[in-house]
Length: 266
Image 1 (cartoon, rainbow, N blue to C red):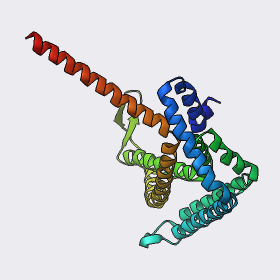
Image 2: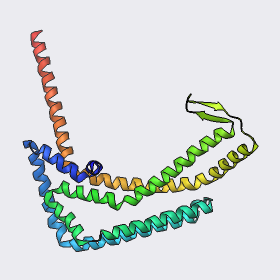
Image 3: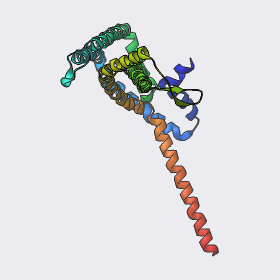
Image 4: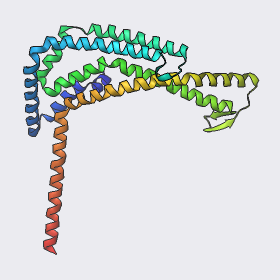
């Protein structure tokens, strides 16, 4: 429950409003926030059904484009000679994950759910975007999962390669003394370490390509969520900026007064 409270922008927005509503200067920002929500309600509500249909249409396009990206990776893009068994395995895994995501999103295809998002406008412009931001975390969950899978797999291969490279050269890490010690391997151990090192070395480029692709997709999603987060928290950011410049102006005025007094005294 604590993790939900920490990660939900909607809950943090409500908590911040309850905390700052005691300050009179924050009422002006709340009035502007509520006016913007009414304006958005006035222009958006007549085309609400079209928005819902267009949203699900774009959702289908996202799934199709992801499947197209996986198909593109299967065909050795840009002349890259990817490892075929690993490439097919990763492609099958991510394709099945896309299927699971589309099935999960299908459960959210409810008019009540979208009406709840629409009625959040009565809580203010920032509240609406806080709800949209929280929904985007669910909607773009698969991008985060893809990036996490590719990152973990890439880090695992890189770490294993570094260990095997040290082992091939007759070195191993001593965690007690925190240093590399010399190790003597027999013929079978040397052959096994060398074979695993070569196999992982040829597998790593394929995994790295998937890592780069999904990291770029996640960065694009993060850029969109940054914009949503800005609109969800704009009253608090504006209030913080005003407070900063107000305090800075008062400090500079105090310093100027002290300088004038010291000049008169001298």
